[in-house]
Length: 392
Image (cartoon, rainbow, N blue to C red; front, side, top):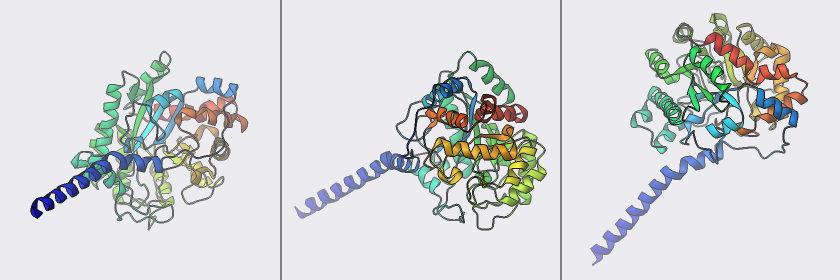
């Protein structure tokens, strides 16, 4: 009798543990995302009729969103996070860069991050039941996110187009005239540690559609130093070879999160436009994450663009006007032809609004005194120019 009671108790405990495990896989990633990808509780005002009318005419492009990291259906309007196809369409976004994250060390911070600490993205890949290969390999983790975007595009009924070439991009531009709900998607990678230390993996990522890559993310790696790393050094020999190979392939080098030395050395090596996909500018908002005037000008000399982020550390505010002020500063330093949007949506940041409400930036740019032609460049025209020049 006692043995049967003991067995029943063990069975009950096992069932409870199983329920906890199931609940963790189902609800924990959602709870984490709700906490990390928030909308700031700040006062907002609806865009003016002039701004709304102008925004509907614009080609809008955003250089950075980490949406593929999260297990949401990209084609369904979400109740959390910042980006999905319905909200991109509502915000009149013509081109969204989806930038793949493969590693985020525990204790990650802007000042000094140790890349050897526990990888939170690895834990998230397990919790979200990604393929086993993505649990242990950074390259496989990146390739899985590429496949997720391709699968969404295949299910979109022609509403989402993955951009792999200049011809793809020209087709997007032509087709949007008849179908303004068509959205282009550009794949990038946030940190070349995703290559697992092997430049042969660049070919695999390129074949999977990646057309933009940053040498580093929040920590130093075998390619070079991060602005937030322990050493913050320059490009390694492997890093210099990576830049050369990317240029030969027609891939865009993204210097977001790069150390000052990596930025300077890459600008000296580059023969094609480079970008900084998401950042602030130090003259408008101080901090290690944000770039100096000299480096703003360096990106401009390459023919590239700097994407201004929407999060507090980038613009020292939580509203559209703070974003517009940072854009004004960058435009005054580098020229209006070299400034763009780089939201950092779904990147574990709090932002003033999701992508459905980008007309608020258009309105703030009008209030900042930009002309309609200048706003057209900032909101997407500059990115269009770079992609037409840089894509293979």
